Length: 325
Image 1 (cartoon, helix red, strand yellow):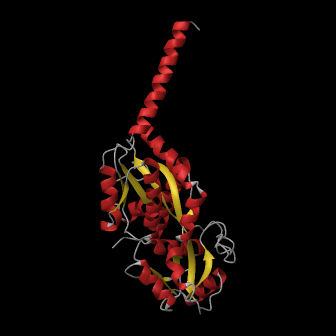
Image 2 (cartoon, rainbow, N blue to C red):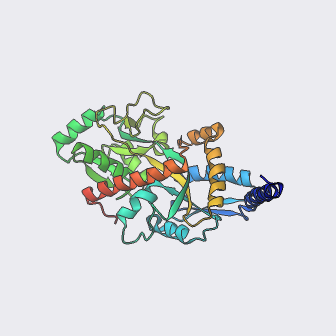
């Protein structure tokens, strides 16, 4: 290579490197807004706030979480989709918003959740257990199926409302086992959990953070874990799969996304730093203390999960004829 060409190529390479460094130093350009279309205090909110605090420490600017839960999350989803695609707005979205809401409210959701956002990283999974009152005669999934079939719809299960995670997790179980349980929706998941503890209903698919207050007093009992492998904190609780319902999995997750038109370099910067954080042991410990499971999914993995879950819940909601009220 001629010396002049070498100098030209070297200059180009240096220019590109300086450009990347400059961009890295200029992002974020001030405080970042993290829009979460869910209520403050929810399990997803806890995970997102832990993550946002870490990013604020890393970048030296605020990552302020804005909860916009109106209209079951439709308003927040719409706002983040219309935000300027400059990286200063990050979408914190869970499986309900990304893969369930579009099927429950197709007339209201104007966003294509599969294609209008690019994945950044998975953050946390909210472990879910099939629970019964502590004094229930039902001791296993087999017992549950046997009793449900013999009582022909008289067994009841609670949820936080039509289309809630508790509702859909149980609908998935019913669709895979051909049993019939009667849905008793409450005004929120906490009220639904209290109903199980008080023996007012017989079954509930309950997130671990919601179940934890009832465990010391033995008000509820876990029948099965909804993940594919046993939960590390509850090794004595078998999975639904282990108890004969092959392929059953209910995963309630939350992750970070950006607008699809965000510059690739900005997306790359946030991905790199976010993936580093979710891989930290002390971050895992922080999540576990909050009743959450670390969920360090890469952007590619998260994107595939969105596509797969979207198709699964489309089928379940259509087959069960569920409509949001």
